Length: 267
Image 1 (cartoon, rainbow, N blue to C red):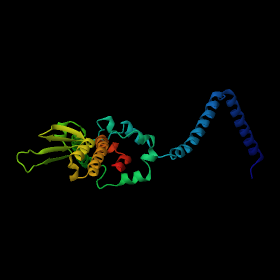
Image 2: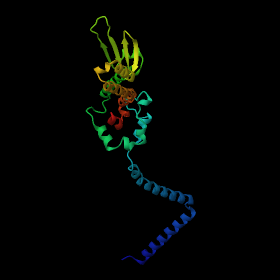
Image 3: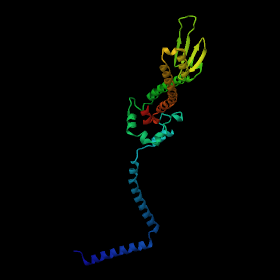
Image 4: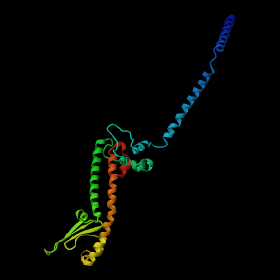
């Protein structure tokens, strides 16, 4: 077994090491600022570890809608080879970003937006299709504007661009015929006896009744035709106005980074 002298020497060495450590700590104390910085660092670490836990929960509360706002504001991220609509009226309407859930991100709009036979990323075919739509709408707009000439009560306009045109031929070659141009509000009559005159439908029906011409088509038919034609005036004007949103929508949908489900569903 160990001797008594060896045990005494071991205890003396431990006492000397402890005394040397205390003396070194007394001569070189650790500054208080180091303790403060260490404590502050530990607090920051604790705070940083606690913050990310709440972040993902807040992001999952609502779907991403920033792309809708960007497209309506004309600042959508441009991809290579893609641009933006040339005119501000061609951008998606602002009501989409005001009510995205109702107008863009509901089940009906998403279903309509997912339909199609061409890859939505194929911008070449997309541009071709909508260019055809733009040309068709422009031609329709021009023809509708020309048709608006029939709203006039001017003789030249009704005879040149009538909704309906007719002429009468007499059995007697000495009596020239009568030319009639029918518009939406009146009738232009070219007669060798009365010259060039324009009557409203009420005046024309009254005159036909007095002269006996009404026996060929009936007074009720004459006035019914006048009422139906007058009702087409508002329809014709509305058609002219609604052509512009159609053209703007075609221009918008040429750019895939500005297309939205709402406009596809309406189209």
